[in-house]
Length: 540
Image (cartoon, rainbow, N blue to C red; front, side, top):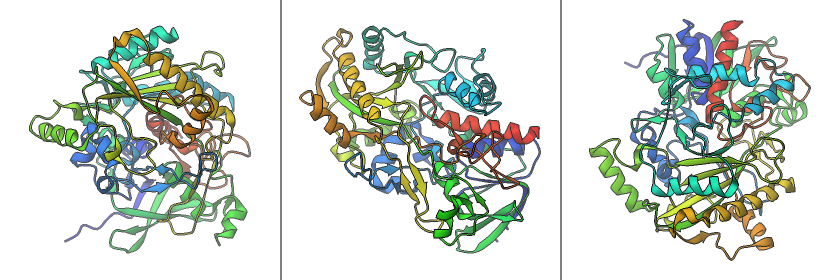
């Protein structure tokens, strides 16, 4: 006999991803009844749990569709009208279950700038306390790092020889330090990468806050599609959902509804519920509850990948290489490359455009060849078969802004996701400069002849020809933010305590609330936002 699912709790949290698992876990641990809703299936599977499976997960269509919503952007007019993939986790743990596990807090200046805009309580010292609560850092606790928290943070214990060469080459070429902890007092420099993985397992938000924290009052309900937030007399009372059997029901929230469905899902649900640009909602026949700029301020990190044939890295991006690794990992868990993230080092450096002491260019390094010219479609078979090293020269602070809008009132339909990449020419200038910086690094003597050739884009690509090539080669880092902007002005959707303006009992807690993107990968900041949300709610 099928167990009847609960339909009422103190708090209803929509989305079990980076922020949702954190806020739900903390609220439930404090003794509140919490229903956590997830459209996807369980994350207790090898594909998700095993850290190094992130490559096949995104490259093999049959695997990708089991954990990803499969969204695409609208044609990007400044990027040759390319429709670019927008991976979003459709699985318990959300996007924290399908990402590269690159653990980056962001630059402390990012949060001080949020606070300076009127977002009281979001300054660097305040969010540092939240970061410390969530971390179990292998280096132990200090003024900046936490120990004993739900998310384990480690480094690959057996990095490639090429990784150490890249550290030395970057440090010497750019005059930056080899930084032991870029998540500590200072971000600038080149470092071995920290990953939210340990003992061969991915430490997604769901692993840390749901499975391991396991609060008794938390009810995780999977394969539940949320259609809209029910708002009565200006107050959110619950949500309307469709279960996997097609039946519809209402789940009531005694205290609050918290949207943690990410920069796509939270904005889409607000609009479907009558919160958004009034005319846009009316165009879709939706009754307006609160006229707010939902879906504006969309922005993302963008990178240009350079791949080099190297002899000091030993891994290959071929299907057969992964198959052999999987076979070995099944027999001896935690002993192969699949025990770690695909990335091994990361740098934060300044371009000629940088302002002050804040690095504006991120260098992701992975000891593999990368798909070329881009990853608009899964093309694992087109990856160069030789041992290689790929550097992702990444634009950290884009000036371009885009929008997210409804395509229809069907909650299962993809909204119109328009990043408007490279609308500001300064963004392309930085990607071009990042390419030149990367080439300078890879020519350094530290590699001792291990760098044999530039495979992609190819050393013959220079000047204007290279700029044109970047338009076809630039890729998203899948860090969309900002569609439910936090602030104190008319451009904001939520207030600094994450309450939706004009609606009682409704908050948003995920990367969509970021006024501006953080310096580096956004998974750790998204988990931090969940921690902050729980503190705000419990404190009130």
